[in-house]
Length: 286
Image (cartoon, rainbow, N blue to C red; front, side, top):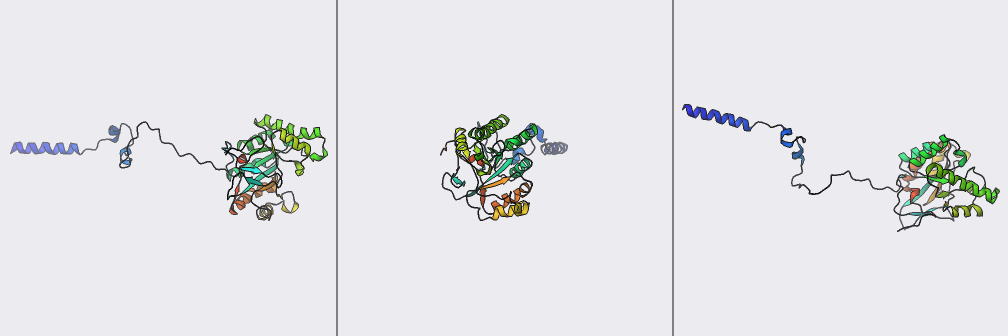
């Protein structure tokens, strides 16, 4: 009887030992305690695989940072300055352009557009690039991924200049922008929309594309206020598919910019990324 009691006592001790919880660090060699439990049922370990990665973001044609363009999607119609698709599409699009950069408000306007994921061309005047502070503004705009265009050195009416002076207005600014950014502009916009035979020759030699606009209002007195400007830019009868919108480095335009972009999108217009526009120094690849 005594031997039976001793036997039962040892059985109870053995049973208690088997029920003891072993620290997970000892089982998994430092892994999280619930690693094995979180493995999906039926999952198998892949041999020779790579570490899992976060999914890459899809390229958005409206993102001004997407500068590595697989192919051009739009061209500028030289007769009416509309932005037209290379291939047939059902999208309604508009192009945003801002002249007289980078005077006072261009960096703020670029920041607003960046937050809204909307592209634009900033057309630059050389007389706003005299100081290092001015040039830093241009670098900031370019660094946010925006296209930089040529708007001449001093914003003259080109028809009133000699051939030599017209050439100087365009080429000197191209040289200056390249010196600052390391890249020459692809687009040219004539002051007051006055293109000449000489300026057309120069932009052809420089492998650029000229661009006027289809509408704009911010220089008119009645629209030098944010609310009225935003309203007319979005609700004008001139807003059509491919519209080329002209704006300027102005306080009221900067204040109206977000409302303009939101209003255009509410009307189902897509903001074109200028990097997707074919120019004279690029061949369309399909």
